[in-house]
Image (cartoon, rainbow, N blue to C red; front, top):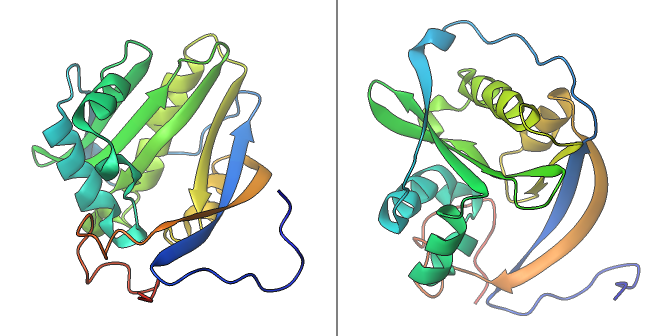
Amino acid sequence: MILPDGYSDIPAGKIAAIVTHLEMTERLAIRSDPPGANAWTLRKVAHPTTDWFRELYSRIGAEWMWYARLKLPDAELAAKIQSPGVDIHALMQNGRDEGLLELDFRQAGACEIGMFGVTAHLVGTGAGRFLMNRALELAWSRDVQRVWLHTCSFDHPSALSFYQRSGFRPFRRQIVVGDDPRLDGTAPRDVAKHVPVIE
């Protein structure tokens, strides 16, 4: 369906975001690691539990309206994050998980960066660039011709430009509409103040 030009009403209780899909179709030189990169390590989470995943996912994404994985039933979430074709990694600082990376290799010849983010106190420290460098090294170490991801207008204001600086090229734009997760208790009422609640 193509939306008409001009304004389109979004019903009360709903939220809407513009989603931008980006891709990289050849292996590019990664950016240099930021100063202080030895503060972080990346660990592969061999058997991620749904509780562990949701806790880290929420700490990273609540402010940016990450909620889709919170609404998934346990069995469905477990099937995704424990799939043999999906690798889950945690960025660690001082022995604590502070970043999340999900690499989905289930489509032949491609890697989707399904989850990517760091906790609030690491934003702006270079941890994101460190994590992206590791993501690209891991993704391109497999037999893939394409690495892709998506971001949306709820995300950090610098997210889109960060992905482009990392070498990704936008190729598709969508609008996503859904129930506001702050109204049903999925997300705390006081998060994401840049997205007003309209009841």
